[in-house]
Image (cartoon, rainbow, N blue to C red; front, side, top):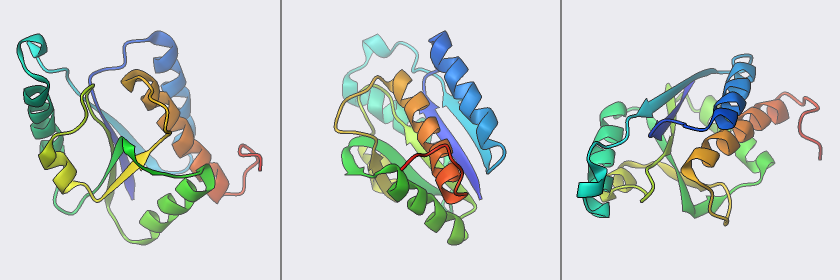
Length: 157
């Protein structure tokens, strides 16, 4: 299985880029990981929030094949503990899925079409994080999930 972490807009802040890079390197020991970035929408200030979501949604859906499993990182969805999330990952690995997509949308969320295509939705917290920060938090949790599955000491119970 391959995990594709898809984000809308590039990560701008150096400390976040560095943190993401560290966990990306660590994850190579466990899984094939690809981080993809959809560029920010041009002239977004001239678009309504809905138009922006639709344009971003079209770009997201162009990345996804019908056989891919799509998980949206969405603040209004089911929350998992780190151990529960590791079990979710394990279940997907055992199910024979070829590509598991985790997607962080733009600042206004996802289009109706993206929600309709999603197989699952996960909330990282009831708190709201910047879309930049979510990237680092998620990739750290992904790394933590694999260390839990391997019974490695990174995750202390």
